[in-house]
Each structure stands twice: as structure tokens, then as C-alpha cells.
Length: 451
Image 1 (cartoon, rainbow, N blue to C red):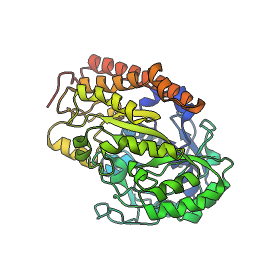
Image 2: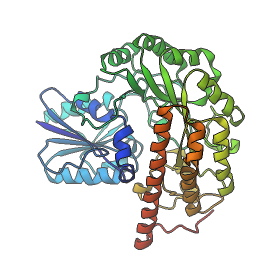
Image 3: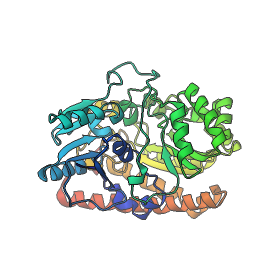
Image 4: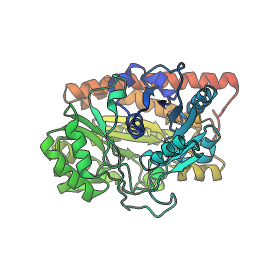
């Protein structure tokens, strides 16, 4: 019996090119799915972000994981393999948030975390009656959440089955959950705004088994469950790792937690600043951020040897082209080591999407454009085209050689800044080509649209 698991690509992979292959970490979804597959099955993994599509062969089961932007591709893959006789499965964040849509394109859909429901599929498949839908057993999707802790049991990923086309740092995840309620975030909606930690011993055993000290902790919010994070960090410290992860900015206000991060070998954190406008943060329910404290927080992280990769989002209702242009000066002032940018995207199934849909501001349902690189809704104070242009100016102006020289403090910072400079220019080409394609087809014309 043969199984194929695919991570579907989206259009941004065309822009990333060598950038994706050189600094991308290996995905966890595929090797975890392989680990959940019963013994005796021959398993093939294909990450279309770094591998060519697989179009030959015969498989009994084909599973495809996707986000919103890669969902159309996932649906194409499911149709292709179903025609070739495979039982098809769709899973990932988008099918979890939009299960009825996904169910139209596959024999089976997985809603939620496969670790807690896929075994039932394999039992049913072996018995000859697989069901159309499997949902994890972690509680009601509309439950209270908000900090509830549910232990998630994840098997050791089958990394040996992955293509050898990723950076050397290995991705590991300890806590799949996030208790925060940012209105635009698909991850929070997927995990019901709760903590979903793995047992600390399991995480440490996995980390100790790796053949590298360079690790990327892929937790959506590593420090959000403070008690769990402190226990895990204490157990990680003897491993002498050098790792990066994701955290909210309020970690800088917690000296014991910050000290624990440093002792455990944390050398970098991705932090969602999102906006330098307090009203925008309030609209997004980003309660962990206070704009006046940005510079102090970054300085505090630097004092502990932790670099800051800061993410910023364009398109909140209080944004204007002028205010977005002023954001770059604030980034310079607060001392972010590596800024990254995205356009506010109302992913289907999130509160933001429901709000904008009710207001009649969704401009397109073409999921291929839901990639944080295109404006898919009508902004409040500018046109969608102006929003895309402001976003591209962020990338262009943030990565001038003058700004790179001002913030790059060592060879690693230099190399990352130069890589992101290339990345921003590749994204500009992608958006320009997308505009040309839409103009030719007459689809999604929104240059003068505003609300």
C-alpha cells in the first residue's frame, strides 16, 4: 500500500525561488503525517515549495495540506489523484476553517489536528469504509478557549522522508496553540485560542535526538503559556542549543521569562509588531503591544542577545499612504534587526473576514490572492492599488543599502538583510505580473476602489 502526502504550493513560491530553498526550514506537517501512517505503508512526501510537482505513479491514499492561498492548487491535486484512483484527503488550516468548501474537492477532509483524529481514518480505511470527515477530539470549535490547556500528542516526525533542500536549522514545535484573539489570525481560529502543548519530556527528547544544535521553534506563540514555557526552557538549557522562535512583544516585560530564554540559547525571535498606530492595534485586538514601549522592548531583547525579526502589516482601517510611509522611520528608531512586511489579509474563517464580508468590502474570492501580498479587500482610506503600492514601498525602502548598513551588526545580520532585500524585489515582480494578468483578464479590477 502506498501513500502520498503533498504540501501544496501557492503563487508566492514563484517569487521566492532560491530564497525559499536557502532559508526555509523543513515543514513539519508532512513528516508528522508520515509518522501517523500505519506500519507497512510506503510513504512519499512532496513539498511543492522546493520540489517539482509529482505527476506520475500510483497511490492508494493521497493527502494534501494547504493554507488559503494554496487551496486552489490543493483542489487541483485532489482532483488529479482521484482520477488516478487514489482516495484523496484534504487538511491544513484552510480546510479546518472552511470544511464545507474543502469537502467538495476530496473524498475525506481532516478538520483540526491530524494527531488527534487521523488514526480513525486509517482504521476505517483498512475496514473499507473511510468517512467523509474526521475532526480532532480537542473540544468544540466554538468553545471558550482563551487560555484553556489541552495536551497535544504528536509523534516523532519522519524527517528522513523529506527532500534535502532546506536550511540546516531543524523545525520543532512544542505548543501548537495561541490564546490570543487577533482578528486577522487564522492560527488562533484554528486552535480555538487555547494552549495546545506537547509533554515537555517529548519535546526535549526530540530536541536531544537531532543532529544539530541549530533549531527553529515553530510554536505560534512560544511564551504565551508562561508556566509551560518556563518548564520547557529549563529543560532545554542543558542541550546548549542556538535557536529562534516566535513570541509576543510583552515577553520583554517579563524578566524571569526573558532570562530563561537567554539561558536556553534563544538568539532570535519573530515578533508581530503589526502596526505603529495604537488605534490599529486596538482594532486587531493585538493586546500584547503598546507602541510607546516598542523601542524599550527591542533594547531589552538585544541586551539578552536576542535579535528581533519584526513583522508589520499594511491595510488597517486607520492606515493612509502617508502613515504607512512614516512607519519606516519608526522601524529605524526602535531598532528592529530584520523587518518583514505583509498586507492585511482577511483569511476565510477569521473574524476579520466575517466583518469585511458583512461590510461588503471583500473584493475577490480568488484564494490564490490571499497570500499577504495582494490587497483582496477595499481599504478604508485608500484604494486597494494604493495599499499594494505602499506595501511594496515598505520592502523597497526598508532594504536600501543605507538602512541595511545602519542595522546590520554582524555577518549573519548582513546576509539576512541582503536576502530580504532580494526577496522584496522578487515580491514586487510578482505583484506587477499579477496586476498585468488581472488587467488582461478583466478580473479583480480594483484600482480606484475604496470605502
